[in-house]
Length: 476
Picture 1 (cartoon, rainbow, N blue to C red):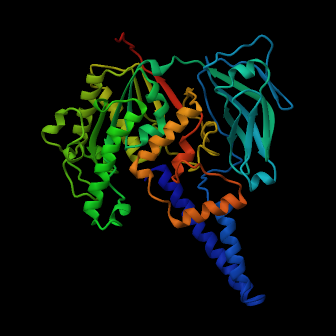
Picture 2 (tube, rainbow, N blue to C red; picture 1 turned 90 degrees about the vertical axis):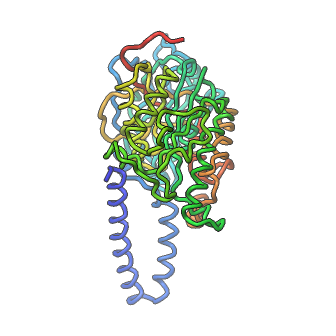
């Protein structure tokens, strides 16, 4: 059981205990006061839960985020005077540097009910970055895109439903423009490439998209059309396979540079545990990856047998890396992203690289899911992406946060809208919860689509964690 599952299990256990205690109190209230009072209190309690306590937050908002950055990272001196954030005299910032600002944020009493927000004003690109209700600890704002206004001394930080405390610390990370290189995006499922890196792959000199699984499970939406479970699973997998090779064209990536490997959703861990054994689909009654590879522009070596084995997956990745010769590989982060298919995808790439003739120069890691906070990035679509929660610093990290202009955000939203897995309507319970939160917690959702990923990933930044590899080589 991975850490995310353990946290969910503990959360549900505590929730059941709380419900039993509340039920006991309601029964006592009904016996001692009035029979109808528990009904009213139960409804009010449910509404309060949906408005303010339904978030999956597996740490205390009072915990400090803890990050370690490489010791050579420049730290321009900054001071917060009132609302003005100012650099020391004579300090200038590189326009496209990734800027991270650490400071303490403490919510007001209203910030326990309404999301605390730090507003960035003073230039042509105002921003808002949102944090946990009840926050009282060290947080890391993303000031990327604000270099000019900060250098001019015009950047203002204002807390809404929170106060900004202590002396801020700024880091300035300078990176080459990775979009000028040949980029391979590893997507565990169709839509992961768009969620994490649509902006990057749309403007890269040459982009390739490699999707590992067909994503055929949880096809209840298609069963409503009258299909049985197997038919629905195969249809969903076929549609997502089509999505994986066709939607990138919207971002300028031709179909001949999009590969669907056709392995089965949530079966990568089982494949990894027994590398030579074929692991069939959970729902589609398939044991042949070629069923979902029919849209591929060229054949792979494993198409000879189509067996869904870990060894075949490694062979596919090795063949593609040597064929494409990417300078940059974009893949899930090994510790931030807890999804089992994402973890195995990252590990498969790293294992494949041990046997390839070609070695990339850079790995860019992303996280489409988190262990600790299901709402991250918090706040509204179109706003900035603050650094995610990390309660214990493990290794030094180097963030890269390229900015997405507004038009690129629209294009990214439309790419997500084309993805079949993000199209079905939300469950009624979730729609009711959103209505309650809109009225009582002042939360907003974008008009792009109902799925939560439209809010979380259509932002002014895409966030990657940079790992430079040794042994760089000259490339074409």
